[in-house]
Image 1 (cartoon, rainbow over the protein chains, first blue to last red):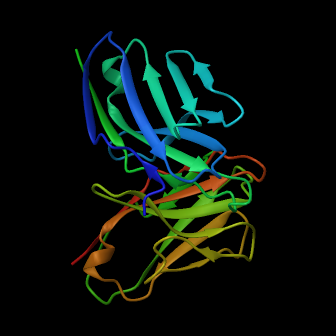
Image 2: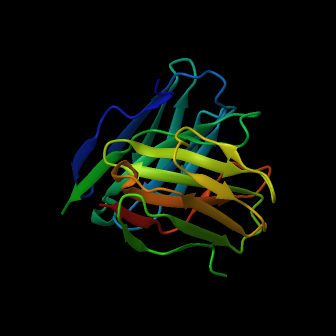
Length: 113
Length: 112
Protein backbone atom coordinates (compact mmCIF):
# COMPACT_ATOMS: atom_id res chain seq x y z
CA UNK A 1 0.00 0.00 0.00
CA UNK A 2 1.58 3.23 -1.16
CA UNK A 3 1.85 5.79 1.61
CA UNK A 4 3.28 8.48 -0.64
CA UNK A 5 1.80 8.88 -4.09
CA UNK A 6 2.88 10.89 -7.08
CA UNK A 7 0.08 10.28 -9.52
CA UNK A 8 1.63 12.01 -12.52
CA UNK A 9 4.51 9.98 -13.96
CA UNK A 10 5.48 12.85 -16.23
CA UNK A 11 4.98 16.57 -16.78
CA UNK A 12 6.01 18.78 -19.65
CA UNK A 13 6.16 22.59 -19.45
CA UNK A 14 7.57 25.47 -21.46
CA UNK A 15 10.63 27.34 -20.31
CA UNK A 16 9.68 30.35 -18.22
CA UNK A 17 6.32 28.94 -17.15
CA UNK A 18 5.40 27.45 -13.79
CA UNK A 19 5.88 23.74 -13.05
CA UNK A 20 3.63 22.22 -10.40
CA UNK A 21 4.44 18.76 -9.13
CA UNK A 22 1.97 17.09 -6.81
CA UNK A 23 2.25 14.55 -4.04
CA UNK A 24 -0.37 12.90 -1.81
CA UNK A 25 0.15 10.90 1.34
CA UNK A 26 -2.01 8.62 3.41
CA UNK A 27 -0.20 8.31 6.73
CA UNK A 28 -1.31 11.12 9.08
CA UNK A 29 1.77 10.45 11.25
CA UNK A 30 4.05 12.01 8.62
CA UNK A 31 5.38 15.32 9.90
CA UNK A 32 8.24 16.14 7.56
CA UNK A 33 8.27 16.22 3.80
CA UNK A 34 11.09 16.52 1.30
CA UNK A 35 11.57 16.85 -2.42
CA UNK A 36 14.52 15.29 -4.19
CA UNK A 37 15.68 15.87 -7.72
CA UNK A 38 17.38 13.20 -9.78
CA UNK A 39 19.27 13.49 -13.04
CA UNK A 40 19.98 10.37 -15.12
CA UNK A 41 22.98 8.34 -13.93
CA UNK A 42 23.23 10.36 -10.72
CA UNK A 43 21.99 9.94 -7.17
CA UNK A 44 19.00 11.94 -5.90
CA UNK A 45 19.87 15.33 -4.48
CA UNK A 46 17.94 17.14 -1.77
CA UNK A 47 15.96 20.10 -3.07
CA UNK A 48 13.62 21.50 -0.45
CA UNK A 49 11.69 20.38 2.62
CA UNK A 50 8.82 21.43 4.84
CA UNK A 51 7.78 20.63 8.37
CA UNK A 52 4.16 19.88 9.18
CA UNK A 53 4.00 22.99 11.37
CA UNK A 54 4.32 25.11 8.24
CA UNK A 55 2.20 25.38 5.12
CA UNK A 56 4.78 26.94 2.83
CA UNK A 57 8.54 26.97 2.38
CA UNK A 58 10.37 28.91 -0.27
CA UNK A 59 13.91 28.68 -1.63
CA UNK A 60 14.62 30.78 -4.67
CA UNK A 61 12.58 29.49 -7.60
CA UNK A 62 11.28 26.55 -5.58
CA UNK A 63 8.30 26.66 -3.23
CA UNK A 64 6.69 23.75 -1.44
CA UNK A 65 3.12 24.00 -0.20
CA UNK A 66 1.61 21.67 2.37
CA UNK A 67 -2.12 21.10 2.91
CA UNK A 68 -2.36 18.82 5.93
CA UNK A 69 -6.13 18.50 5.90
CA UNK A 70 -5.98 17.22 2.32
CA UNK A 71 -2.76 15.27 2.94
CA UNK A 72 -1.32 16.94 -0.13
CA UNK A 73 1.83 18.79 -0.98
CA UNK A 74 3.04 20.44 -4.12
CA UNK A 75 6.31 21.76 -5.48
CA UNK A 76 6.20 24.92 -7.57
CA UNK A 77 9.08 25.91 -9.81
CA UNK A 78 8.93 29.45 -11.17
CA UNK A 79 10.22 30.20 -13.71
CA UNK A 80 11.01 26.74 -15.07
CA UNK A 81 14.35 26.29 -16.82
CA UNK A 82 15.59 23.50 -19.13
CA UNK A 83 18.11 22.52 -16.43
CA UNK A 84 15.16 21.66 -14.17
CA UNK A 85 14.38 18.68 -16.39
CA UNK A 86 14.79 15.70 -14.07
CA UNK A 87 12.82 13.18 -12.03
CA UNK A 88 11.39 14.65 -8.83
CA UNK A 89 10.71 12.45 -5.83
CA UNK A 90 8.47 13.36 -2.94
CA UNK A 91 9.40 11.80 0.43
CA UNK A 92 7.95 11.80 3.93
CA UNK A 93 9.03 10.85 7.43
CA UNK A 94 7.73 10.98 10.97
CA UNK A 95 9.08 11.13 14.51
CA UNK A 96 9.53 7.63 15.78
CA UNK A 97 9.88 6.26 12.28
CA UNK A 98 13.55 5.41 12.74
CA UNK A 99 14.37 8.41 10.58
CA UNK A 100 13.27 6.47 7.51
CA UNK A 101 11.99 8.23 4.43
CA UNK A 102 9.08 6.91 2.40
CA UNK A 103 9.39 7.87 -1.26
CA UNK A 104 6.86 8.36 -4.00
CA UNK A 105 7.51 6.84 -7.41
CA UNK A 106 8.63 10.10 -8.94
CA UNK A 107 7.50 12.54 -11.62
CA UNK A 108 9.62 13.16 -14.68
CA UNK A 109 9.65 16.86 -15.49
CA UNK A 110 10.62 18.04 -18.96
CA UNK A 111 11.11 21.76 -19.50
CA UNK A 112 11.08 22.61 -23.19
CA UNK A 113 13.13 25.57 -24.47
CA UNK B 1 35.20 15.98 1.45
CA UNK B 2 33.95 13.20 -0.85
CA UNK B 3 30.44 12.94 0.65
CA UNK B 4 28.78 9.58 -0.02
CA UNK B 5 30.61 7.30 -2.43
CA UNK B 6 29.70 3.90 -3.87
CA UNK B 7 31.89 1.14 -5.27
CA UNK B 8 31.61 -0.21 -7.95
CA UNK B 9 29.69 2.02 -10.39
CA UNK B 10 28.72 -0.88 -12.67
CA UNK B 11 28.71 -4.63 -12.33
CA UNK B 12 27.45 -7.59 -14.33
CA UNK B 13 26.89 -10.88 -12.52
CA UNK B 14 25.71 -14.30 -13.52
CA UNK B 15 22.84 -15.91 -11.68
CA UNK B 16 24.10 -17.47 -8.46
CA UNK B 17 27.20 -15.35 -8.12
CA UNK B 18 27.81 -13.26 -5.05
CA UNK B 19 29.08 -9.72 -4.62
CA UNK B 20 29.37 -6.89 -2.13
CA UNK B 21 28.56 -3.25 -2.77
CA UNK B 22 30.44 -0.74 -0.68
CA UNK B 23 29.11 2.58 0.54
CA UNK B 24 31.47 4.99 2.26
CA UNK B 25 30.77 8.41 3.77
CA UNK B 26 32.92 11.07 5.34
CA UNK B 27 30.05 13.23 6.58
CA UNK B 28 29.80 11.67 10.05
CA UNK B 29 26.36 10.25 9.31
CA UNK B 30 24.87 8.11 12.06
CA UNK B 31 22.26 6.59 9.78
CA UNK B 32 22.90 4.84 6.49
CA UNK B 33 20.52 3.27 4.00
CA UNK B 34 20.50 1.03 0.95
CA UNK B 35 17.79 1.55 -1.69
CA UNK B 36 17.05 0.04 -5.04
CA UNK B 37 15.44 1.93 -7.89
CA UNK B 38 13.50 0.14 -10.58
CA UNK B 39 11.55 1.69 -13.46
CA UNK B 40 8.17 2.93 -12.26
CA UNK B 41 8.85 1.82 -8.69
CA UNK B 42 10.61 4.79 -7.15
CA UNK B 43 13.13 4.21 -4.37
CA UNK B 44 12.56 1.18 -2.17
CA UNK B 45 14.43 0.68 1.09
CA UNK B 46 16.37 -2.58 1.35
CA UNK B 47 18.18 -2.33 4.70
CA UNK B 48 19.30 0.47 6.95
CA UNK B 49 21.50 1.15 9.95
CA UNK B 50 21.01 3.61 12.79
CA UNK B 51 24.55 3.25 14.07
CA UNK B 52 27.76 1.30 13.95
CA UNK B 53 27.11 -2.40 14.53
CA UNK B 54 23.34 -2.13 13.98
CA UNK B 55 21.24 -3.05 10.97
CA UNK B 56 17.53 -3.43 10.26
CA UNK B 57 15.30 -4.59 7.43
CA UNK B 58 13.55 -2.21 5.12
CA UNK B 59 10.75 -2.74 2.63
CA UNK B 60 12.48 -5.25 0.32
CA UNK B 61 15.21 -7.07 2.30
CA UNK B 62 14.96 -10.57 0.84
CA UNK B 63 18.09 -11.79 -0.93
CA UNK B 64 20.32 -9.13 0.62
CA UNK B 65 22.48 -8.85 3.71
CA UNK B 66 24.23 -5.84 5.18
CA UNK B 67 26.94 -5.01 7.66
CA UNK B 68 28.06 -1.81 9.38
CA UNK B 69 31.28 -2.66 11.15
CA UNK B 70 32.56 0.90 10.92
CA UNK B 71 30.52 4.07 11.14
CA UNK B 72 31.70 5.33 7.78
CA UNK B 73 31.00 2.15 5.79
CA UNK B 74 27.81 0.27 4.97
CA UNK B 75 28.10 -2.90 2.89
CA UNK B 76 25.34 -4.55 0.90
CA UNK B 77 25.80 -8.21 0.02
CA UNK B 78 24.12 -10.45 -2.48
CA UNK B 79 24.85 -14.08 -1.60
CA UNK B 80 23.27 -15.66 -4.68
CA UNK B 81 22.32 -13.11 -7.30
CA UNK B 82 19.06 -13.47 -9.22
CA UNK B 83 17.87 -11.63 -12.37
CA UNK B 84 15.20 -9.94 -10.21
CA UNK B 85 18.04 -8.12 -8.45
CA UNK B 86 18.96 -6.28 -11.63
CA UNK B 87 18.54 -2.69 -10.54
CA UNK B 88 20.26 0.57 -9.66
CA UNK B 89 21.35 0.62 -6.03
CA UNK B 90 21.70 3.81 -4.05
CA UNK B 91 23.28 4.33 -0.67
CA UNK B 92 22.34 7.28 1.51
CA UNK B 93 23.57 8.77 4.76
CA UNK B 94 21.88 10.97 7.32
CA UNK B 95 22.89 12.78 10.49
CA UNK B 96 21.01 11.88 13.63
CA UNK B 97 18.28 14.35 14.54
CA UNK B 98 17.84 15.49 10.94
CA UNK B 99 15.53 14.33 8.18
CA UNK B 100 17.67 14.93 5.11
CA UNK B 101 19.39 12.00 3.45
CA UNK B 102 22.38 12.43 1.16
CA UNK B 103 22.74 9.97 -1.65
CA UNK B 104 25.66 8.37 -3.40
CA UNK B 105 25.91 8.24 -7.22
CA UNK B 106 24.52 4.72 -7.52
CA UNK B 107 25.65 1.27 -8.66
CA UNK B 108 24.08 -0.23 -11.75
CA UNK B 109 23.88 -4.01 -11.33
CA UNK B 110 22.85 -6.45 -14.04
CA UNK B 111 22.27 -10.10 -13.23
CA UNK B 112 22.18 -12.39 -16.26
